[in-house]
Image 1: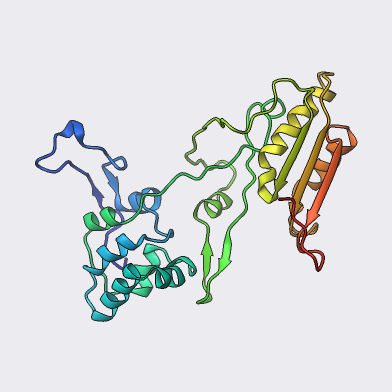
Image 2 (image 1 turned 120 degrees about the vertical axis):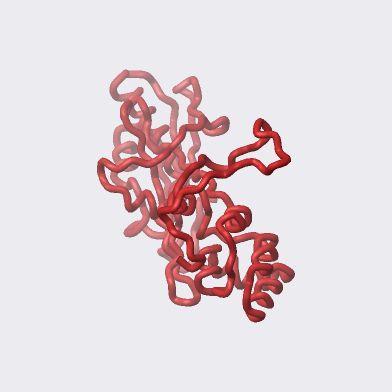
Length: 266
């Protein structure tokens, strides 16, 4: 709205006149509507880099906004304080911080960062849930210095989905976190907060092997950390059940905000 775009308009990205079409790399699928472009492919809430701010300064129509953008682009400390620490995205910048910016859709697409995929570890075992996957996501809502709320893009998108809704996902195998091929091998697991996600999947698998398939498993020691037991000791009942059935040999929980001295697992 601030730039005067009609969200229902559609557009097509084409190679420059002197570029071979075979060498043209599409930055996202087109034709698409401006609404789809902004909501799916442009990172509106992430902080624009200093180079982007320098480019935006050339489209500022007031001296005040030009001066502010120039200073943001040239001063690392000022940029850190005003953009990074305050969670100012390009949409907030254009709508509220420097509202005199006027630029075309083409220039906006060139300057704005592309939306990057968010990676979440699957927190369920295919042995236990063969037709579904679980994710453990912390919903990011943070109070900014101006009193507004900074909302994490992906976590709040997922939180807003209803049963039956769809979203775009892809699967990527981890080359680092893998259960041992020999289930009798002992494990020491450390998972603070939502870092418990892949550990939960592993514990489900070992519990399934032990209790349903009568396969011996090695000792498993888990260190879990959170702020306090009342608000973010996630999967407390499951972890206690794993301890009782012998999947977890030793369970240690560190609460970083319950005592005068902070205790962490890492």
